[in-house]
Image 1 (tube, helix red, strand yellow):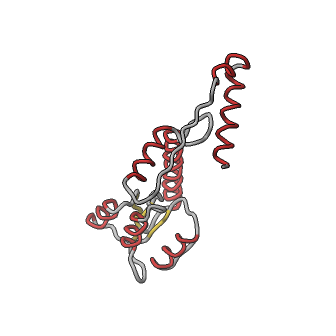
Image 2: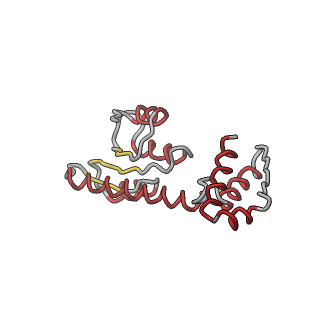
Image 3: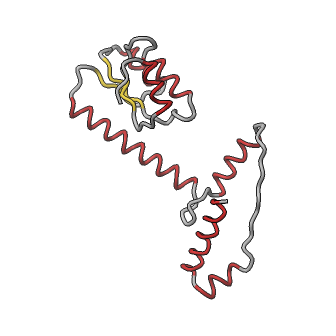
Length: 168
C-alpha cells in the first residue's frame, strides 16, 4: 500500500492491517519521524516494524530513527535485493515474536488464555475503571475421565469445554 504523505500513511493504518512499514523521513506535511512516533504511541499499531528508507545518511538522523522506534535504516539509492532481504528477515523475526507471544499467553491444549496472561490482563483491569468479573470453574471428578477413557480423550473433553466457554 503506497502513501504519498505522512497524513495519508496514518489514515491508511486506521483502515488497513500491515505487517511492516517502509518509511521515508522527508515527506510532505508531517515527516517520517512524526509518523513513527505516532505509530509507536498507538497500542494497536506499536508492534508494526518500521524500516526507514531515506536519502538522509548522517549519523544524528540514523541515531534518531532508531531512538524513536525504527528497527532498520536503509539509505537511498538502495539495492533492491538487500532491501528485500532486510524486509524478509524483519517479517520472519516479527512472526517469531508473535509465536513466542502466543505460546507464553495461551494454553497450548485449549487455545485460551493461560494463567499468566489472565493475571497480566486482570492487573490492567484492577488498575483501571473497568469492571472485572471472574468465574472459577471446576470440572468435578475429571480425573475419572482420564482414568477411564485415557488422557487423549480427557484432552478432547477439555478442548470442548474451553470452546463452549469461549463461545459464551
